[in-house]
Image (tube, rainbow, N blue to C red; front, side, top):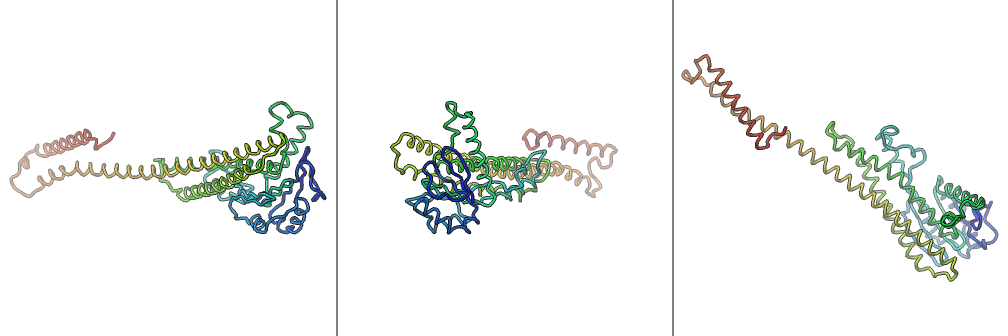
Length: 370
């Protein structure tokens, strides 16, 4: 469990503070198992700092590693559970291209996708985050906040138009929205992986060089797309409920606080728009995969039709030849051309003429293609 005090600066604390912060807010970040073990102390400290603790049902939600994304609230805090969707450790380099990856490595990376939920509990002066044991988002934001403080100290980011973007989060809700936005943006790596694998499978599906035998990989990719779609839909519902609840908050009277509230709404809508983009991309990939499968079976049907057409033409060509040879093979003493020296050549010429005539006829009627 780690503690960070965010006000005009960013500093790490050794333990819970004795009094609530008068300026800024306290960010408490803990792993799920650590939160479960120290739940009694967490509840007591939250009661001391905020005047209220966590509801038992919300505690169960925070400890549930299979909970979908959702939003809930009480009169003294808001709770958002947001499922991350990221490649597990050691699989970041497994992507599909001609030099660094193969189809098997892409399958391994897709099978290693981590969908653990991250819980956010937003008080007025405290932000509690409950995350999996290996949470790279916390480490990323710790480094990013330190960079913001260092930049402000060197006066590098105080130019017009940049200071408002790079300053420290003014509230616990603002930091939560920034973390969620970063989690959504990290989906881009997974989208690239899915896009590359989908393009490779579609190319193999529509290839005429060899028979397609990657049906298991195609099924796994489609299942991953369905998982991503379901996750994004839950995320969209949770963020939309958060935005609706944010609109019901009383508007501050101070101009600075009112502006911060508007910025928070803008950030929240931006997160929702990013989720919509990911969801739209996933649905396009699903539609593209479905279209590729349908085109594959259509091509297979066309190939079968071409084979049957060729066999039919060959049968139609040889049928009159069999008739001619059958006529001259009958055991009669008196047949035309049977006792002459030119009979064989006349019969061969007749059969050749029949073949040429039929081929020309079939070609004109487009029974045969070049």
